[in-house]
Length: 346
Image (cartoon, rainbow, N blue to C red; front, top):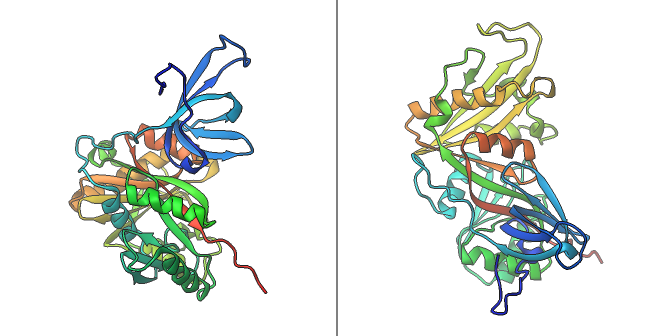
């Protein structure tokens, strides 16, 4: 914790720091002299109605009344450099992730990329700002808003909230202009080889296309316009889909007419393997199916020359965060989306 020269504790975070990793000291007991303190480290996922919510590395969400906070500061994200994981900056990984989850339509605005995919996922329907938009910020935001209006989509910008000064400045500028923050997430990295370090599991089947059964098990594909979900999911340099059929035995047999009990997706782009859409049906959770799905996808990615893994997960998804902790993933950087203020109608 930070102390002033006089030994006093300081609160050095504000609601603008939502999405960042923080260290917070709060009162444990009654607010009286000599009360005990508790230190909490994690991602600040929300600050509303006088309550801070912090998601710890084990996935547990801690709620702290702001009146109980006596000291706080932002802290660097957990180091992502591990054996077998190439060093990479936030912008490099943003480009890799965008390549692995491609929008159906893009347009350049200076160093910004406008992306649209009929509303299927925020990743494919938001601006990816990677520098100067080539014009003043207000003119750029007006262009962005018109572009998304023409496609009947809300204007959104994906903003990294790591230690990149330009990104932090953009977040502040958008906040000043009324662009609200939503869907806080982290991009995590890990070594690829340890994921595959287990015996092959014959229940897991790999395919180049998802198929109707896979799509039926993927919750986010529900309600997607036309074939937007299929086109985004199949985009990327080298894409693989994993399925554990319902009723599959250890020998790989399955009962007719049953849907998948677990699915997953992996896209290989050079040294990176990106994991997404890892889902297990409620009745089959806590059986290690997510782990074996990722293991088979990792084994395939290793054959194609990848050496490192990444994935993106929302900070409120405690179960997924805990799983990826166990599999050796570490936070690389945080990001969130900014939504344009609603235009007034005459």
